[in-house]
Image (cartoon, rainbow, N blue to C red; front, side, top):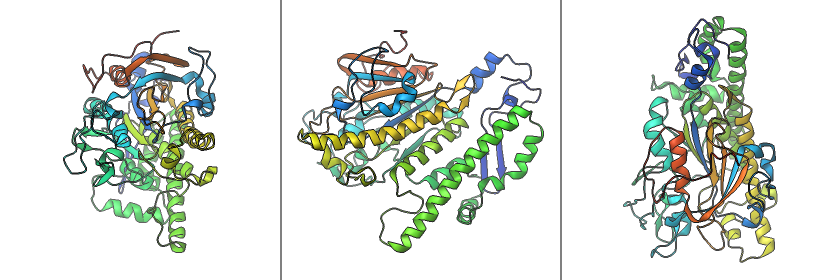
Length: 455
């Protein structure tokens, strides 16, 4: 890291009419003559994110045969080949509180509600919902104080929070994995435009958001609003920082361009199909939607706007078809495959398609410099589902994948844990790495062993 004589605050924003664009890590953010190790420690915080997939997994094509570092990626995990050294496949974890425990049907609602809380949700379709505080929000209560946004909740499928969505369980349970309090869910935002405006819009003028949206529809850039601030900043930067800033602003503009293109296409499609369900700003193509949301999460981490995020690839119990990969049937219906190999193969197709989007995100993080490594090195990610086999609705031996966080854990391995090990144990270990000391989370029984072992 090059240390310059000019110091820029890590909280510096490029400001303009209705815009506030955060900056990536620059050398000029290091105090003059500071030791590189101290600087890196200061500007490279640990981060965490949780990516949830619904309806279980085709476990035949998920679990590697070999343990340790010699494992071969099964079919569903093959998209992760370029980042295999950056993942941990964790076999044997369970979510006991997603089980019925006397409450009868409702496995989908319990799966998503308890996945990050480790708490059995109250069975109700009314407003008296109750589950527990999720791990992301436990972290946000402390780490979130250092960032503009305590946490960021994203998704690819909209849903309601009221009503009965699963055998007497409230829709709030199937549409949220993040819970601020036991009775307050954090529903995911599915509209890329809304996320972009939240990240890069200014809160100083209540009239500005509408003006920014009008400019966006005219294909004008939010970066135009901060151009004067950008020129002033560039004038005082060294060559390396100017290059970093240019690369970052190019990435912001590319995401903004993608959002604008989606809105334009949605508007054109709405003229042809006025009854379409998708609102403006949400891509019709699933992969485009997921990757755009992952791009936004990357920018949020890169600029330290937040250090904590959750992402629902689809709501639990989702009936979405995936015609773009040759699967016209609804996902949930297929998950009740009755051990029919043809139906199970289609589930594997959906699972692999979801994994391709996650792999895109991991590569994005790995290719984004951050301090003494990459964003992936400093970001702990969990990918998984609260249901193992969708046909059995079982909640033991969950499909759980850990990625990134090489500064905290030893990745590139397949680990198998003893039966009935709570998945919440993993979260306690992650909270420790975030500097958030927590004695208990849901049904946790301690920290998860072997995450930092060399072998």
